Length: 364
Image (cartoon, rainbow, N blue to C red; front, side, top):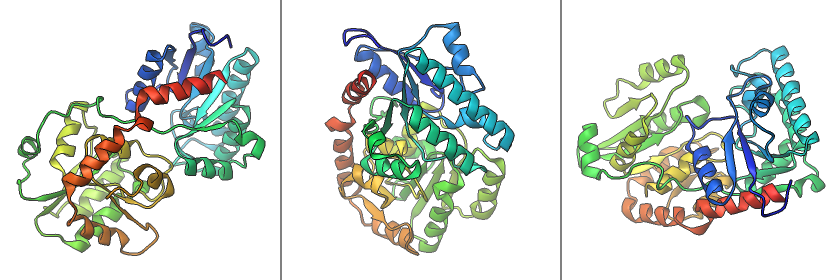
């Protein structure tokens, strides 16, 4: 890698820009900081080397989600295919390292949420830890969990950096008022609206939220479950079990960028009932839309919120989520939402700051 005056050429893999605004925002900020960023093809065997041979050798290979390269196009791949994919991906990385490419891995998840072969995946990710030049996590607690999960030695831990996720304030439109959003969604102005937003999957705890809401049975309240349900069987299950409740509304599909504001601005409080989580882009989205949030008291979340008026509950305690929803009914939504917005606007979550931190990681 050349000197500090050299404009770094960074290759992001895989290319998930259609599904995740994080990569776009990080790439834009890195370009503004004086780097070049391009995206590799979506994960398939040898796709990284094909991209390099078709274009040029990068200075930095930045791996974001390695699991598609291990599992291929289907998360439920067989054991043999998983092994072949994992070996191929490691060979690609070693080939690039032999040619002077620096490898950086940002750990967004500890493992694939749907993997049938966690031990195999863990083995390949432990190998990725060892061949990566630098490793980035989004919180100090995430660093601790990654060290434990992949048996990272104290000497290897020195190549780890903590860089938080940034805000989403200028990524999505935020021009409709509460009244306009509710009119568009046919929600009465005097109802209390709880919102779940994000992918709808088992590990997200959506059923826990639905059960807690029905058990609490709050007066004049609506629960919106908004986000893409990838598994048709799970989508059908949720609608069959909870769809008869008129207070529960499902939007189990991809939400266009311009419509995201409708659901956030129509809501009073967002609930993210995760059963497990390492980092959450949706949490930063909540802060960016100035909404209060009910979340489990995981340390990686607590690092972001700093106890600022939001409601955090013990995910291992029975009825804790129901109690948290009851407390949320008494919350000063505007006051807490404004505190969250101020938090999103603070220096650690500015993309210019994050770009400078990543540039330093790339160069050291």
